[in-house]
Image 1 (tube, rainbow, N blue to C red):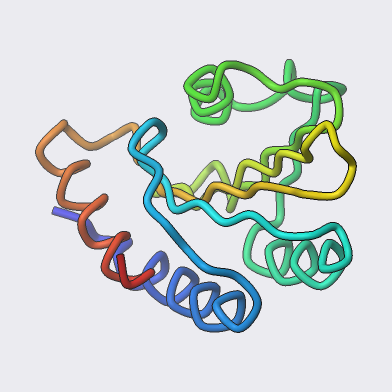
Image 2 (cartoon, rainbow, N blue to C red):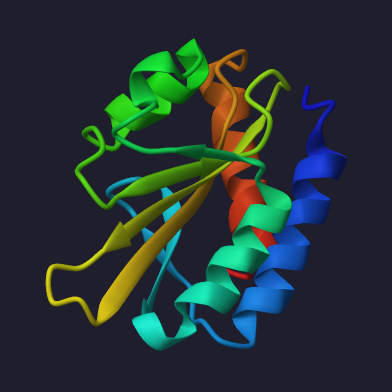
Length: 139
């Protein structure tokens, strides 16, 4: 079924533990992701932690050059607006760890949505992956 579970599980578990010291996770049914909101005062620390697990950054300026799987994720989120970012693990690996980074218009708050995506999986296996993912974040 999911031969990349361990890599995703390790990254997600580390993120949940490290960021869980600062953030409170909840489930976002709309996007099937974990969601946390935080003050911009924690921006640098959280961004650094995320980028240590996800090496790719996609913004409006380079989204058009993103691989197909990243384009699918960007479209799933309704596109990227200026100031929004999509962080991903290596898009050439099967099983993508992703983070939608959305600053609020008030300039004081940022939302992040973390998820996993595998375009090679059928619906049933993607549902299993989502359940595993939720467990890694304790929700």
